[in-house]
Image (cartoon, rainbow, N blue to C red):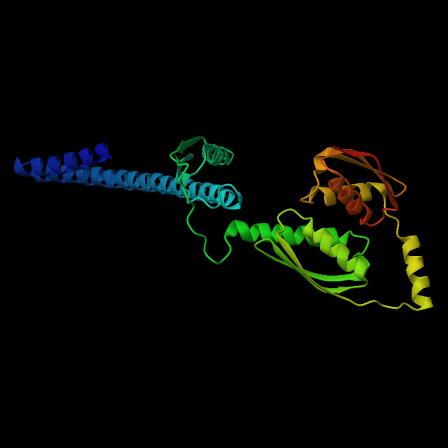
Amino acid sequence: MLICINMTNYALHYGVFSHEHGLSIPNRENHMTQTRKILRASTLAISMALALGTFAGGAYAEDTVSQNMNDVRQETQIWTTYALSPYLRANDLKVSVQNGKATLTGTVDEGVNKDLAKQIALGVDGIKEVDNQIVVNADYVAPAQSTSRSYGEAMDDAGITSTIKSKLLWSKYASGLTTEVTTKSGKVTLQGTAASKAAKDAAQNLAMNTRGVVSVDNQLVVKEAKPSTGDKVEDAMKDAGKAISDAWVTTKVNSTLMYSSNVHSNNISVETKNGVVTLTGKVQSGAERALAIELAQNVQGVKSVNAKKLTHD
């Protein structure tokens, strides 16, 4: 760009100089022709320089927008994880990200929560550095929650509802249940019909023994159907043709125990052979052992449960 301007200045100066020094008409015309050529070349050079500058500026702007989008994405991911964490959601934490550096501010009541917030931020793709300015105050009281559910609580409730629906679906009482499950702040409501009181009680038990459940309002209505002889034969034929694999049974028993709030599933090993489930391990009490057996018995395809190797303290 500097060269182009100098060339233009030279051309203008040269033309004026020729005129001021009284050159002859032919020489003056030659000089003017040369000057016009230089001006055209200078104009072309300036245009090219401006175009290159515009291109470079556009590329820079595009890179800036892309980086800003990454910052927003990372901030959102960190904040969402905080909102889902039962240890951090009640705290008034703020997150800002710039060029891969996350800055955390706010207050927590324990140092372990401050470290948790940092580790969560570092776990987000693209975060290279964390400036953890969170203050630890043992006397900190979290701000009062609004009457509406927080994002994290809504996600917890959705998870509870989904888990209960799954447990009911693979329960041996599934065919006799038409159940609608709703959850609000850990309080579960069951609505619909059950083919028997046993099915209704089983649904109550499965729901109540789900992680995160505070209470269960069992509004299931028992409607005992009286099948005809033809229905019995048809059901028997369906059952005969419904082969449930041992692997499927083992998976569902494991899942049922894992989602239970009153059973330590990590301490229990499950094996299935020809529909007979064997539970092995050690639990904390006789009540926990009895519940594990009951939950296993309620899974579809389970013919019996062998818990001789399942002991308790």
